[in-house]
Amino acid sequence: MDILQCKLWRWQFNLTTNKTVEGPLDDRKDRLTEFGVFNQAYAGKTYRYAYSALLKPAWLLFTGIVKHDLDNNTSITYNCGTNRYCSEPAFAPRTNPKSEDDGYLVTLVTDMDKNQSEVILIDGLDISAGPVCRMKVPHRISSGTHACWCPRELMNGGGRQTVSKL
Image (cartoon, rainbow, N blue to C red; front, side, top):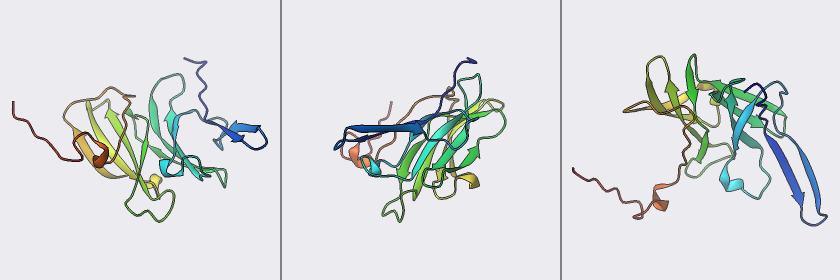
């Protein structure tokens, strides 16, 4: 595991000149990051912010989330806490967002000491403030579990909730 040196990297393709520019996204060379995401409303457009999971060196564990400001080459980190590990973040924009980072980062967090997990929402405008919402999961989820999030309207059934009784 010591050879795992994950870094966010970006390739920019100019379809007119056929020139490609590439380089690291993180402002800190000593930090290991994985699972880079951004606000999907900006897919194919210039975007300012990217988010990633902070990798614990020599482990496949994520200790927090990093918000990268690509215009200013700076970053802000949210740390999950001692013996708490998150999964990859997803970005969910607010309804009628006022800026690119006006939304929530959604991730699963596993607390190894309490043997439990929760889903947390972090305000994309101020990730260092920590979760604005915590939802306890009925049982512990394996650290690093992958998930995706989508609006209810895209779910099968057109957004109607179905409850079944066993």
